[in-house]
Image 1 (cartoon, one colour):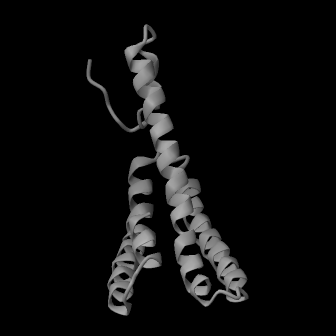
Image 2: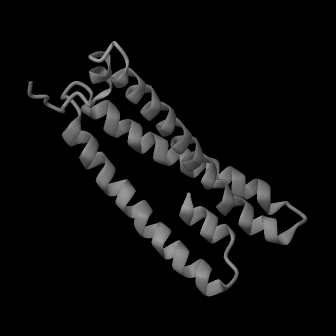
Length: 131
């Protein structure tokens, strides 16, 4: 989200280039490290589905970004033609941030309530808890 905002609000070509290089490194790490992490943390029954979904969502995101770029190409505002698609990348990150906060509040609320054991079901299945 920060990279998209910095790139869309860049005031000089050098700023845009530096931010895009950092975004490219982050996307490269996402594309290569996330499937490894998913394969390590998931059970054998769900490993293929989770790593396959990662690839599916990467390709779906690329497809959506191509259509957004195509739509912004026809804008009469020349600045929006290149800033719009870059700023659009902030929307999924913002939705994930909001969802993360909702999940965190829900699990913390359960942990503090009288149903104190129910919050354990929100933990990852590979996490071993010692009593």
